[in-house]
Image 1 (spheres, rainbow, N blue to C red):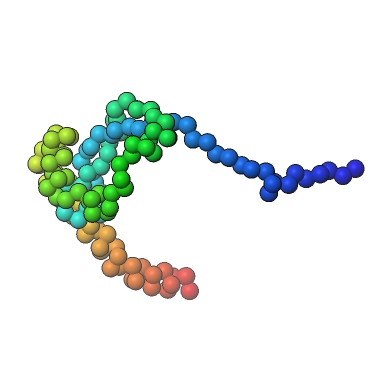
Image 2: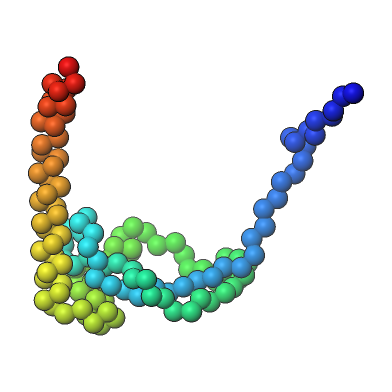
Length: 126
């Protein structure tokens, strides 16, 4: 007896999308060391109830895609967002900036020592 294989190349596969749930998350003081100036901003765990809309509605209403320059938050905008929306004090922001600088220095030290680490590893494994 012979079994016939289904020719999967002739089968059409389809994907359907239903609805989108959009959430607005809280803004919090972040800790990301790639922040170049001022306090880092992050999103927290808390969010407002989800708004559900269809994919078609979203596509019809979505704003134009923003450029990288438009997405970047400068020092003053971040400070204002954190102060007004998250209730972060100037002292908390200063502490966060100090923490970021400390982490940046640690990363720079590690990067500078990488050749030494590689040499040491090569010597040890010989």
